[in-house]
Length: 374
Image (tube, rainbow, N blue to C red; front, top):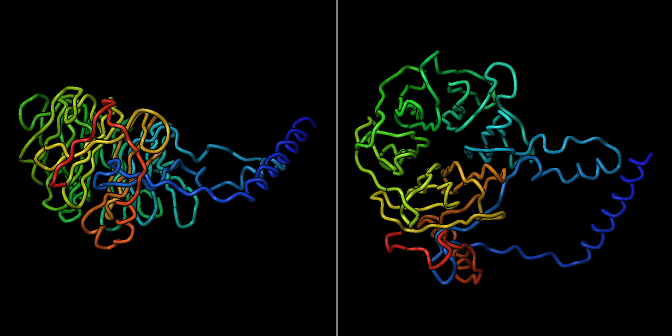
């Protein structure tokens, strides 16, 4: 009786609030531009994803009038890796042990790996092939799983002892190769998409081509280069598609261009490298030679603020997805590429005209470095 009475009171108050809000003019959405004006806009914030809560406002009313609701069941808890495919955001959650599929068109959330064959334990990162099959690394099960577009398991890679702790994965869709970063083996292992082992490269050490707990990986689609975050060597290393060392950049430090706890990596269509650093709660952007171009983000809650930034992903439209494990969210940003400027001249002009001051560099003062080549 008391429970129902409270629901009625809260529900009545909620309806009054909705009624009051409906009479007010809608608040205009701010444009968050990076870097802050009057600098040339390089990225702008799009939206934040948190799971089912992004869509199900009606569930609140269902609960208030007596319908039971399972709040938070399909919201992210501790996400790490993310991927966008066919307007569906795939998010690996290391606590809930599933991959969330956030369908933006249907405005609903489903799960991959929740039960049955291919049940996940600690999913970390996600990739897809050109047939829209989904691949997921699982650190606890020490496997890489493949699921079709309907979420049905068709592939499981990792015999006993094959992986120590698989972390980042990437797929070269032109060569049909799957690259798996085995963090505790300090090695990258390369397979065909039918699971045949092709070759591996790397060992523990600090020399060129060696690793110390590497974590994440991305492929530069311009040249098929493989770029790996060598986390405990505080650097980023680039290899060709066959694992031959090309270059490196980065060192331990707390100044721009240095790393303290690098994790996620993404590469845009113009070849810029985006590196997330958990210690700095920011993203640093470099050219492929390792020159720092820009950095953004700060510690905190809300858009462009992070508590424990983790994985990064860049989709085919140059939209960057940044995962915050502690806040249970994924922030998305549009990179303002030359192609985007040509296709969106009016939006580009609006970005240039904005007066919004947005992000703060992680050192708390000064302006972010920029380059004429960016």
